[in-house]
Length: 71
Image (cartoon, rainbow, N blue to C red; front, side, top):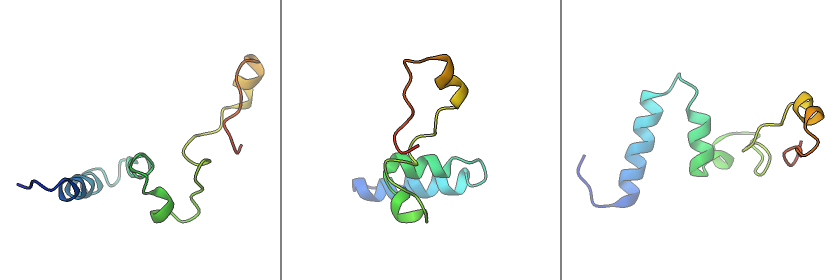
C-alpha cells in the first residue's frame, strides 16, 4: 500500500491487525489502546475496563497497593 494520508495508513494497519490476529485475543487490547473500545464494544465502560482489578491477595500482602478505580 502506498499512501501519504495518515488516516488511511492507520485504517490499513488496524484492518491488517484485525485480520491477522483475529483469534489471538489481541483485538480487545488494540481497541482500548486506540481509544475505539467505547464505540465498538457493547458494555465497555470508560475508566473501568481499561485496567484489570488487582487480586485481593496482592492487596492484602502489600498495604501500599490501592485497587484500580471502579473496582
